[in-house]
Amino acid sequence: MEYSTKAIHGQVDDTGKGAVTYPVYLSSTFLQEGVQQFGEFVYSRSANPTRSALEQQVADLEGTRYALATATGMAATAIAFELLQSGDGILISDTVYGGTWQFVNELFESRNLSYELVADFNQYDFSQVASHIKAVFLETPTNPLLQVTDLEKVIGRAKAQGLLVIVDNTFMTSYLQRPLDFGADIVVYSATKYYAGHSDILAGLVVTNREDLYPQLKLAHKLLGAILSPFDAFLLSRGIKTLPLRLEKHQENAQLVAEYLDQQEGVEVFYTGLSHHPGHAIQEQQASGHGGVVSFVLDEETYDLEVFVQSLTLFGFAVSLGGVESLICRPATMTHESYSTDLQERIGIRKNLLRLAVGIEAGQDLIEDLAHAFDKARQ
Image (cartoon, rainbow, N blue to C red; front, side, top):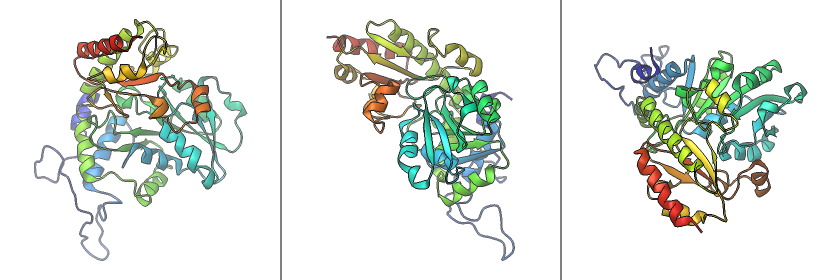
């Protein structure tokens, strides 16, 4: 069955009442038959019918045995990190989402956990990894510089050293890229983004095929209370049904925008769909597309960045991505403001770097909006 069909028909049926869409069970608690007779649902923090239906829908799409729906993307990441024990360390890409870096930078030490930033996993020598390192956390493409990690090679090398591999697949979704197929142990998502697709909920997902890991992940999910509400589960399930259609348009527009930006004077573009991107060939091999995020640097002598941003009318100035509308943000002061100035400079998050979350509007309208901003901002 094709992905787009699964996205629509992947939910369990209702209890014989004929509802086309699975109902929203808002109840916090459920009646039990007797002192020794407990049903599948007892208390909604542990399990809720609407959330469980969503989790089955996601597992079917991901091709996994297990899925957990969480309150946010950061909740999904936090649950994955709960597998680490006191004294453990983790390898993490130095250009991950700013919230993920802030989590390890500010919360790990008090838990007697440590982390090591890796500039390029493709070049990392896993044979020299320290004994306390137990896991790898990576994004590909990375946020916001869109660096590509060779999943097959890197996961293979990490697994050869006995490391747990966690991949944040938010930018791609399983529609475009399936890290579990390359041997990843856990995949996490901010489902706020493409899965939900309408900028109206916060949500996260944790998926795995590991039968030995799932009970620990499920326990953390329940005890941390990091659960997705029933109504948000309904909205996420609804969003998933149009994911393939939306993502195809996101990609089409992103390619158009990236090619336009690439032709402009004083603009450096980061998008894996461009043939000159250093990770283009790997991305073509391991994914079925390039996603809807485009980053670029404006030459400060050629353009006034503030005027450029303020001159846009279709690209709203806001964080996040994956909604139907186009957005623009400045990572140095927004998504990655938690990074120190020194770290930002070292990894290439410059003050004149902008990130576009390209929406599903008419592509030519987006080009005209950008062209207008370039004209206004030229110095």
